[in-house]
Image (cartoon, rainbow, N blue to C red; front, side):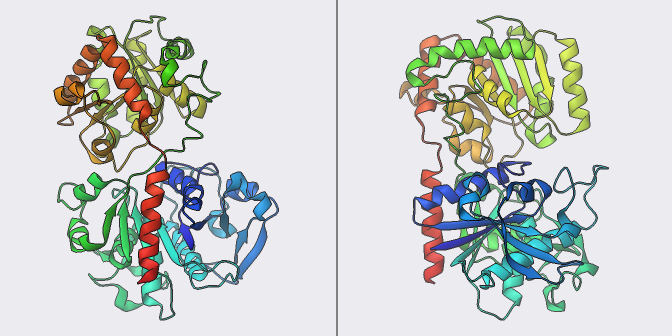
Length: 483
C-alpha cells in the first residue's frame, strides 16, 4: 500500500525537533512492512539543494500568492534515500534559517498561508493529482499539516482516509479568524465542530477534529492529553475522539545510533565491552573542559534549553551535584535566559559544569557514549528520543514521570532491581526536590558497580528501533484503507 506523509521538517535535511526524526525514519521502517511511504515537505533552501535531479511532478499557477511546483527526486538520486516530494513555492519557503521563525526571532507573519499551502499540496497529491503516486492513506504530522484533514473533509471529491499525529500538543498553530476565506475554508468551517478554536482558527484543532485516526508518540502521552492538566485546552476534543486515538511509541534510528559503529565516539563498544565507555568518558571530559576524574559521576544533558525540558531544575540542584562530587555536561540551545544561566553556572563551577550552547551532532553522540547518566527532567514529554539513545549507549537515564518517559524507562525500584530488569531512574514530582531525590538514587546506584553494570546492559538490550512502531502504523493504515 501507499502512504503520503505530510510534515514541515525531515531529518537529515531540516530539523528542529523529534518530528524531523520521525518523518525521516518512518519510510524505511515501513518498507519492511510492505508500505511505500513518500514524504511531502516544504521546499526550504536546504531541501531543494539536496534534491539533485528532481523533476516537476505538478505545477500550480497560484498557491497562496504565487506559483508553486511539487518536485519529485529521481529514485536514484533521492536525498539520503528518502522517498520525497518537495513543495517548491519560493514566495513562501525560500527563506534561510529556522523553518518557522524570521530573523528577529518571531514567527513569520504569513505562517498560516505557508503551512496551509503545504496542506493544500498534500490534498492535491491525496486526490491523485500525481498519477504515479496515488496514496491509500494520508498521514499528517503536527499543526503544520493540521488542515489536511479539514481540506479533505470540506472537499466533495473522494479522498483517502487521514491519520493525524500529535508530536507535541503545546504547539497548536492558532491564527486570526478573519483568515478563514483567505485559507480557502468555507464559512461553515468556523464552528465549534469545525476549525474554530477559542475565537481563532486552530490548525491542530482542525486535524484532531477531522482525522479518521489520531496517534500520539507514546501511550502515556495519549492519556495525559485527555486530561485538563495535559490537554492544553484541547482535552475535551481529545476525550470526544478517544475511540480513534492510538498511542504509538517513537523509535530510534538504530543505524545512526549504534555505539558499536559510531565514528563520533573515541572508542566504539557494545554490551560485551561496556567498560570501554571509560575511554569515551575521558574524551568527553577533555572535550568539555571538565576535570579528568574517572570516578566522578558524570551527568549529561542533550536538550533544547527550554522550560518544558526542566533545565532550570538541573541548575537549581547544582549545589547537590557539587556535594556528590559529580559533574555536568550540557549541550543545547533555546531560551536566552536559560542559556545565560548555563553560562553563569559554568563560570561558577569550573571543571564541574561545562556546556556548549548550540547543537553539534557528533558531540551529542559523545555525551551519550561518555556520560554515566543522562538527565531528562521534562515537565511534559510526548515521547523523547534522548532517553532511548541513552539506554542504547549504556548511559542511565534519569527521567521525570511524564509522557513517553514513563513508557520507555524501567525504574530501578526494589522489585525491578530484584528481577534484574531496571534500565534507569524515574522521579516525581517534577520539581527541584523531586529531581534531587532522583539524583541521589542515581548516585547510590553508581556506587554499586555490579548493579550499575547490570542496568547498563539491560538498557542496551532493549529494542528501541522502529521495528515495532512500524508494525503498529502498518496495521493502522491497513485497517483505515479497508473501511
